[in-house]
Length: 230
Image (cartoon, rainbow, N blue to C red):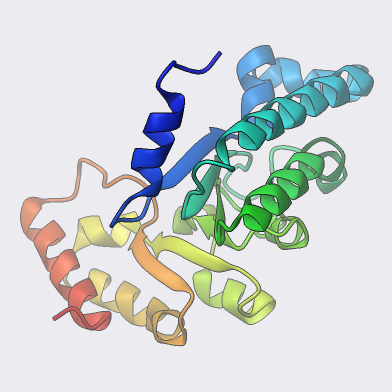
């Protein structure tokens, strides 16, 4: 059951002068929490009906929560955590993604957008080039963090997919750590996509420990200049 003051909390959240987002675990993420990564991948081969049953339960559970929340308050963005890709490939085949994940992506995206939420963002580390077309087909319109070390190239993604999907991230963390000319060249590389729109540039994951304070400040300054804040 929801807390006794659920309606009051929703009213306070709806009466806002700032953006408000909501986040949840996607089907791959949640099933991995239940079964473990190796266990889930083996079940997708050995007992796909059980995996489909778990995925369907999670889809219906989340949709049920939306049915209770969305009449009271609609977020400005929904963030779905998936983390379903390695350095160069997805962790599962696209057929598996279609079968076990797309029903949830489609249902949730349609549900929140029909309620007035304009943005649905899927987060996955690793190489997501194979997954982006499925996300677009599912109605997802943002993805992140566009990890450069995993062969993600925001410039190539824009060439392939146009403005069917927007992006956050995309700045190579290794270049931020190197600083100087390496950082300048990295920002120059992604500048065409920044100017083209539909892209919020930032570090392609958490800022790593090998980024010095001075290099971080230089990164912020250059990015602010490039995006028109300075």
